[in-house]
Image (tube, rainbow, N blue to C red; front, side, top):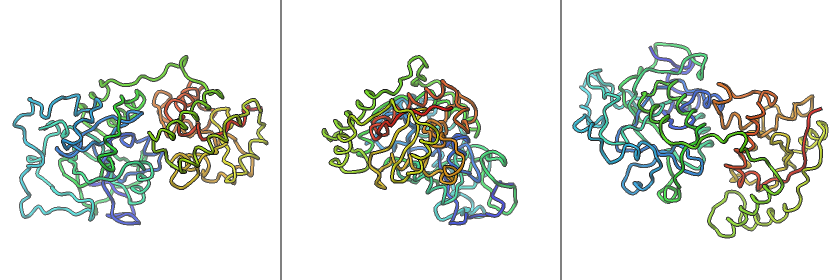
Length: 435
């Protein structure tokens, strides 16, 4: 008996369901829920060999699917491909390759889920590949396979905007783990095609747009927080313990100790502006948004305009909020900022801020009535966007629920990982204190 949305037997309202192979934060049910993603079914899974391999790359050491071809062999970041060394593991010699499983008998026809999501083998238990079977490192690429709607796939496209969907094949390694009351709104029915352990499905995975994008990536270890998110999510969805052990044992970047948190100063923000200016002038970075000339102009105009000594009352801050969209004012902890950078539709930074803090559902109504100014606190938004299990199994729902240490961690995180993109785009207007 399969699990499925009560009113959706085989298709979502806007088309066939799709299979998405998650490898990063989307392996965690909390991360899924925070992004309003509700897979109708979810299974532990593994990509078939020879397609992609898992690596941790980029400035923040995020999980990425690197194509398995030799032209990408130099992209090694401590993921399974390099950790297990060599193109083949000796202990796996002679084991059956999942891609060479015997074809189906005539009475076991392929089961079509959709034009882009297809179960290509529905095998007897005796012919199903073992989760331990492996002939090369990429066959150990584990993840979580989610069955999602077309709308949810488009939402993922926005989240993974610098990557693109790529076709892949995955083998299911266990039972459906999406249960009512957790991350999926569904009921159990009998009138849906049953798929499960051992079945191989066509799916999509997010990977690089082109080889040049891969060439520009740099090695970086994943953060300890990120590894915790992945480990807990994979355990929840029943991903084999081999992968969870690997994640927990791999080198990572430990969380910054509270006594080493960096705090915002005017000098800090100006240094970030100067660094952004240098990158633009040297043409070593293709920063999103406006043209280089426009970005240089606003960076020059921003210099010397910060007024951190001004104190805002609640009423004054709400009046500033009410001027949106002409002015985009927000908080980062107690600091009051105005976004003055590019606002073009191509600018990913403003799009993220607009989605997370400016265009909150019901925001205009809240501002017109009695309001908590922290509705536009970037620190609160980031506790969901950058979920950290260290501070609880669920992110806080209100700013007052964020511990002082967690607030400091969010401020430090913005400076260290997103400062050049976010804080170089703002003017510091002052401080807001309750009471």
